[in-house]
Each structure stands twice: as structure tokens, then as C-alpha cells.
Length: 272
Image (cartoon, rainbow, N blue to C red):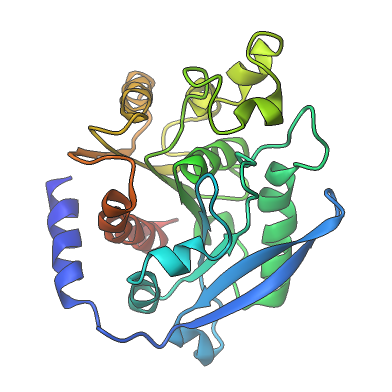
């Protein structure tokens, strides 16, 4: 981990000040929800060479949208050029939490991201169409979504990383419209259990996924992330774990971005 941190600090100091990455906005049809979803795609300069490239799917947080990663993270395009992977950032709705809602058929974001979006991106762009070259990450609500989708769809994604992810929904029964997606905790307790990432560790085997968990020690999700880390240790599931001083805010996430991009890059380099 020390080597990882030092490498990330170093890459931040040498990143090119200008980026040649190309940003595209498009709409992806979701047959399961019967409407199109706005999506941002960031293509590195190397994409012009015509060779298929790996893809990182980045999920935004609660109240964000498909433009959040590009707008809020100025360093993203430089890192995409440096590491030569494609980034795809779909609109996850104001509060989808990236699962298929058991009570609202208009919210089927698990199906959309893990199936419809991936198939559409593979059909539209020069991508390496293999789980070993496909990763997913996100922050806050998107951190939950990244781990949730990767745990449940290991045939689609080979790596997942979470920044300040809401990995246990149960302590927050009145927050962030979660109850609008899965029902009130008092009447739908099973939905809260089965849609919390921390309860899905049983789906993992050692080395079945490359994983990174990252959360600030002053974040309201910190205890849940630490508990997930400890559960993974108990189950002998290898993973990278980062905790450092920080809150649930953009300052922390901007600092995290270089760590996560390096994690994805190393995964793509070493995946077998």
C-alpha cells in the first residue's frame, strides 16, 4: 500500500498540464426502462490509433448526473490520456442507487449499467470486450453502485473501486431517497438487507475481483467501509483499502482520483 500511495503522489506531480482526450455526450437506449439515458464518454488520445482499449465505468453520487465526473474532476482527462483507457459515465438518476428497484419499474439501473450500457458501448466504440478489460468505480451512491454491480456481475466486470461508498444502507433509513427505491425499512427489511453491499461479500471468492475501498475517517460512511474491509479480511478476499483524514466531499474525492486511476491501470496491465 505504501508503494501505491507513493506512486500516486508521483504521478500527480508529472501529469501533463494539457489533455488531448476527447469528450463525447450521447444517449443510450434502455429497453428495460423504455427511455434513453444520457452518458458521457471520455476517449484518450490513443483511441485515434484504432486499437481496442479497456473501459472504466464511473458512477456519480446522489444528486449528480452524467456530466459530474468531467465537470468536477479536471484531472480526469489527463489521467485518461496517461493510462489509455476509455471512461464511461452514465446518468444514474438523482437517486437510483444503481439497483433494480423492487417497487418502481422506472428504476432498473442494475440492468441498464451491467447489461444494456455495456453492450451499447461495446457496439459503438473500439473496446476490449472482456471482463479482464472492464472495470467499474464510483463515489458515494456510485461507490455503492460500483461494488454492488461488480459483486453481482463478475462475468461483466473484473475490477471495482469505491470512493466513500454507501456500502451499508441500513443505518440510513431516512436518507437520500433510498426508501423510494426499495420501500421503507419497517415494511421492506429484506430489501435493505439484500441491496446493501456489505451483505453481498458471500458472492466473492479470493481473487474473483480486483477491489479497492477508499474512505475518509471523518466521513459518515467511514464505519461501514471499515466494517466491509474487516469482513473481506475475515473472508480472505484480497483488496486494497485506503483510509485517511477527510470528509464526504469533493476535496477528498479529487485527491482520490489519481489513486483509483492507478489502481485500474495496474489491474488492466496485470489481468490474466
